[in-house]
Amino acid sequence: MHRSMDEPTGGAGLPAARSHPTARPGPPPLAGAGEELPDPAVLGALLHRHGWQRRGGAPGRYGRWTPPGSAAGTTSLLVPESAAFPDSGELIEEALLALEHSPDPSARDILVSLTVPSDEIRWWREVPESAVGAAGASGWTEAEELRSAARQVLMAGALAARGRAGYHGARHRRKARAALDDALIGPGAGGRSLTAYVPVDSGRAVAVRLCHALHATREAVDYQRATGGMEAFDSAVAAGVGRELTEALIALVRGSEGAGI
Image 1: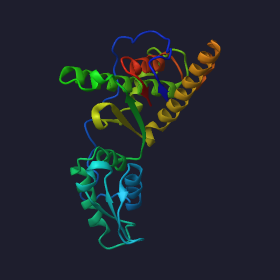
Image 2 (image 1 turned 135 degrees about the horizontal axis):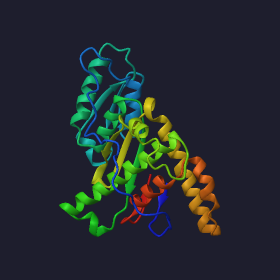
Image 3 (image 1 turned 90 degrees about the vertical axis):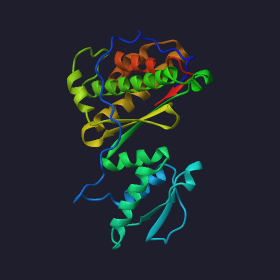
């Protein structure tokens, strides 16, 4: 979903501060003593998804992967095609260790994805050039505004997963927070993006409902801009749109030149 600052958003300002799901600094350990290592095929798929390049290796046996962009010369992973080879476990352990020390931002995303099967929800904001170069407190404020908006969006999705309503208030808030207890939130490159990893087991309903609600919001805004009518927002409530999501989206785009989820 994309929203530019010149588009009407409607709704009231942000309410008083409320509790939000906890952001955690990094992924837990992938494999301790006696624990099963990740499937090599899953690791390869995640490397490909995050832009890593396979550069050589024996087809059907091993692949050598390097990170995208300028970090390509800093890390090289030798990943087996399957766990059937005698040295597969050792190679996977070496690859995980290399990812932990890789300077490429995608390395952390890959490690988090391997830790627990999760749905990834990404946010980004385009801020004015003057803010991009800001240092100290100003730069910190930009990052905190994005993080706060992302938490509000997640909470709105969790509330909508419990039940659809134009305004939830205090209803379902405790259970909504519990559904997000295991969600991990981490910054992207440059501090202008965030990624939330919502575990499939506890949070798939939240991710699905949030996806439906965001699409319904986009369609309702497009309809209002084209016709001037507000009736599309009434039907959007059934998809999970409510005051909480509206306020979260306002917080996301405020002070930016565009934002997306």
